[in-house]
Image 1 (tube, helix red, strand yellow):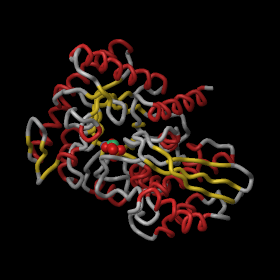
Image 2 (cartoon, helix red, strand yellow; image 1 turned 135 degrees about the horizontal axis):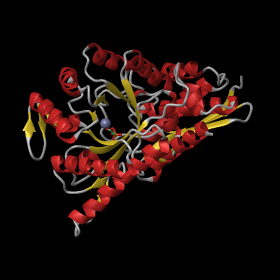
Image 3 (cartoon, rainbow, N blue to C red; image 1 turned 60 degrees about the horizontal axis):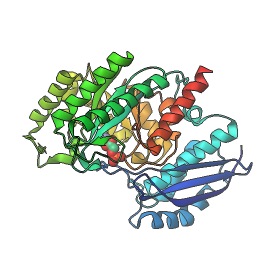
Image 4 (spheres, rainbow, N blue to C red; image 1 turned 180 degrees about the vertical axis):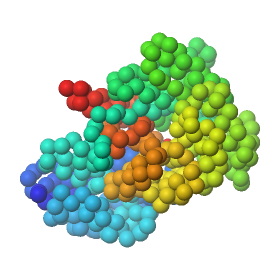
Length: 404
Ligand code: PGA
Ligand code: ZN
């Protein structure tokens, strides 16, 4: 098949206007693929490094010197070979030489080029066995922000609409409605306050943690009544961010691990949560397992910082029954090949996967293809903001393509 004749890496801005990288790949046929890589703020301790020590300028320098020469002339059909070359030129366990974002941008851009060359959408290029593109993910939409994504909000990082309609347009409609009604309710409750939005487009308001869960749960119930669509409350606690010396330190309370498990299990039952991400510290495999034992039959218990999309860490979680679900972020682990290895490990063991954006995003839609092609249970991509809506719109397009 067609060979790579040029490959470039350039500096672009993410949704926080911080610099990240985008890769452009050109084949001898003239076909091109281009993709940008996002960046996190509440990053897991075990993620690969987004950039080498010298940041984006060093990433671009290293790319020119080491990465591009290793890719020129390579057959675009050799997807895993391309990702293996990225590992080989990097030579470190955490992509600290070339940068994980370089690996992500190149890996996705080459997969897009392969798709364009062979007349297939990206989701088909990466489709897992038995995935036929007819089962669409739930929308996991961040509606209220706190934690490190929002100054002045609750300690819990994300208050989420988990919108499970099988048709993308229904799932998107219900999630958008929850976001909108929460905004209306906040304007009503805080008529004089300046309401803001956090990094992922959720509202920011001076609410306590439980007040915010309660508001989310009431609004989801209203939207269910109004639309008859299955939308339920969820949380990403990002608990590692407020875990200090063995305790979970909230503004309102401090809990030991057992107390934290009890607190979260109680929230699940009181408010009907169906989705709970990172309720415990990123090393707390056994506390996760206890929570999953207690409420895993009625909620997705999702490991994000716990697994960092890494197949070896996921294997530990599977052995200890830590969660029933895993968050998938391509640039936590680097390449699509690494990502798909983790997805396959999850699928082989009956865990669901949630394909996720980062807080600093690029206004591109490829993430929706990763969700569809991996048979994800959910697409976590926010509700508001061009960089979030780009993913929702791509999922809507994919829904229409299948409907046609
Ligand atoms: P990040 O956080 O993209 O800032 O790392 C998102 C999340 O915790 O899910
Ligand atoms: Zn998270």
